[in-house]
Length: 250
Ligand code: NDP
Image (cartoon, rainbow, N blue to C red; front, side, top):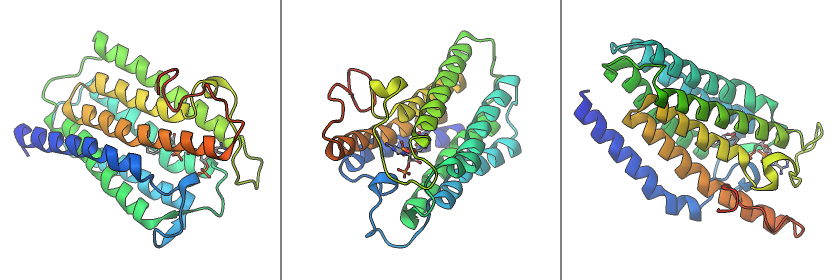
C-alpha cells in the first residue's frame, strides 16, 4: 500500500472515531461496572481482556517486523514502548484484576479485536514499512513525547493499582477511591492512558500514531464520563468537586 492510500485510510479511520463519540456517550460499552446481561454470549472477563489486547501486540509486531522501512533507534524505541504497554495490558493487567467470576460480552471482545487490529496494523505498518527517514531519538519533540509517554504510563499504572487494591481478595464490589489524583478526577487511569498515547504520537510524529491518540481519547473520555455519572448515582456522598477525567474542567 502506498503512502497516499495509507494516509487516506488513516484519515477515514480517524473520522470514524470522531463520528462514534456521540454513540459512545449515549451507549456505554457493557463491561466492568457497566456490564449488562442482554448483550448476548459472554466469556470470563480476564480471558476476554487478554484476547482483545494481545491482538494489538501481535498485529503491530507482525507489520513492524516484516516491513522494509528504515528501522532506526527511534523506531525500535517506539516498538519497545508499544510492546511493553501491550504485554502488560494483555498478559499481566487482566490477571491482576480482582474480577474472578465476572463476564464480558463476546460482542465487546470481537469489537475490540477489530478496532485493535486496525490500530495495530496502521501503527505497525507505518513504522515498519512507510517510515523512510530515521527517527532521531535526540530530537526535542521525541524527548518531550517520551517524557509525556512515561508520565502518562506511570499515572495509568499507579491509578489502576490503587483501584485494584480497593478490593480485598474475593470481593467484587465498588468503593470510592480517595488517594492521589482520584481527589481531582474519577478516572486518572483513563487520563493517564490518553496522555500516554499523546506522548507516543509526538514521538512517532506520523498520521497513524496521531489517529491512535484520537481513538484513545474518543474512546476513554465518554467512558470516564459514564464512570463518573455512575459513581454519583451509586454513592450519595461522592465528592462534589471531583471531575470525570480532566481536573477542574471535565
Ligand atoms: P476501570 O477504571 O473501570 O477498572 C479498572 C479495574 O479496577 C477493574 O478491574 C475494575 O473492576 C476495578 N475498579 C474500578 N473502579 C473500582 C472501584 N471504585 N472499586 C473497586 N474496584 C474498581 O477501567 P477499565 O476496566 O475501563 O480499563 C482498564 C484499563 O484498560 C485502564 O488502564 C484503561 O486505561 C485501559 N483501557 C484502554 C483503552 C484504550 O482505548 N486504549 C480502552 C479501554 C481500557 P471491574 O472490572 O469489576 O469494574
